[in-house]
Image (cartoon, rainbow, N blue to C red; front, top):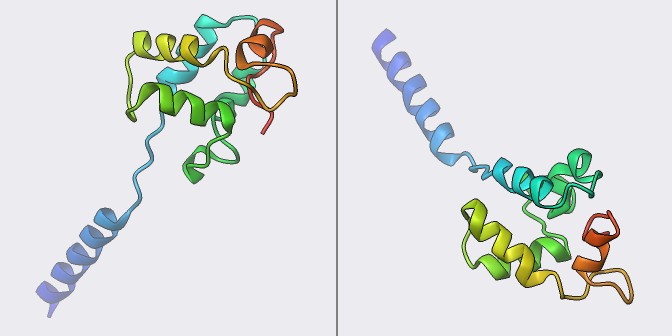
Length: 114
């Protein structure tokens, strides 16, 4: 009986582990963003909100996050690939009328307000 309980607990634990949704945090992103754009002071406190709406675990992207994702074309990227993506999207329209992502960043503001 004891053997069945231990085996059952191990099986349940294994199923819970397999069923867990993986979180793909990308701390290198905010580090590279902050190094590339040191005048955007809010990035240090915004962290995941530079690209996400709500919690990063919700996987909801703001318009800047969507643009960066498209520019990268893959879920993980090297610092050089991130920098290239920042450059690619700099001229795209932001959520602020008449401003591009690059304009906002040059003004020391976060590239997205949504």
